[in-house]
Length: 367
Ligand code: F6P
Image (cartoon, rainbow, N blue to C red; front, side, top):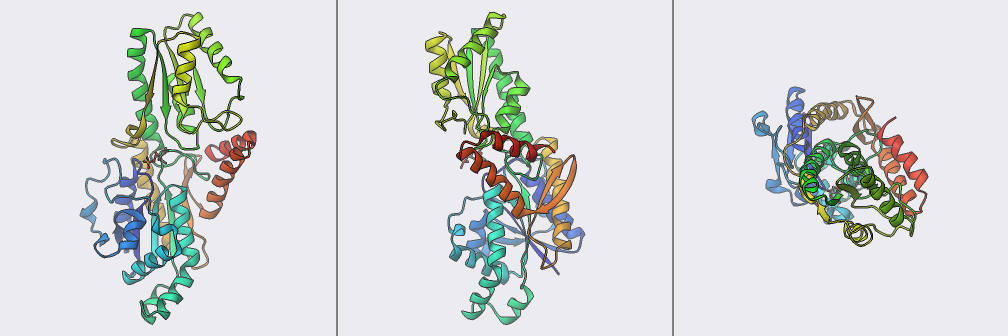
């Protein structure tokens, strides 16, 4: 029987539990044996009670829960080769040679590196006597399927990541709530949203809440000029009769010289230059909390089934795969290409090639 290890890694995202539930149940349905690996890669390094075979009923109630019920970690040990060697040993000792990893690009890269090093780890473990020749033979090849769980929607190769829709929904609800108090006091609100180096959450939130101004990393305003433009835009909209002002700023926003643009600085400008009564709201982890929207439940469920199919289809020559969604179709693509494309967006931003970043970014969000 093929045993499948399942882990969630990096920042949690709504819909991860739906994915875990789906992988467990669909793999049982397909005659495989699912194993839950608790606390991400850290559970893989620790082994022992962190690896538990899952029954159908073990994931009951998972679908509607936010966060990840099997735990997650940002594991430093697994970033080192020695940590991955121990992880390989844990898997082999449990007879697991297929892994579904649900996480962001860093977590998925970790899985791909483990796979690339796998033959080397097998040889070393065999030589040191930590695994037997039979264990080595039975686990000669590691199969990987990645699922993208991240509120940031920052991975190339998929239109939307698991969790992004729930986080956006949460942001919109929060901003709607702010609008009523803002209107009562004729105030300006500056709202900072998550997304790391990606502006998807901020851009989508600005569209959906009717914000007056937006700052995202992919389209940074000119250094030294944006302050005037911001004031002009907000003043114009008040002159047209608006009683409030709403600015959304992505946590990774910068100007064209890559200086951070922070909510407090924006507040200062609005208070001093326009004399607006201004408040800052940093939404923080509330964006990652709470139960998943139907879209993330659905995505986790259907993509989980596809991840199992991808594992079943894989041969030793199949590269690690990543499950995505393009034009409303579930896709399976080589993981490495998706990571490379994601990284090249970041590189372009770092070298101030913002146009290039935006083009690449849009090609990864929508075809
Ligand atoms: O990647 C998801 C994310 O929520 C980012 O938007 C944010 O920058 C980061 O994780 C926060 O990380 P932590 O939960 O470790 O504070």
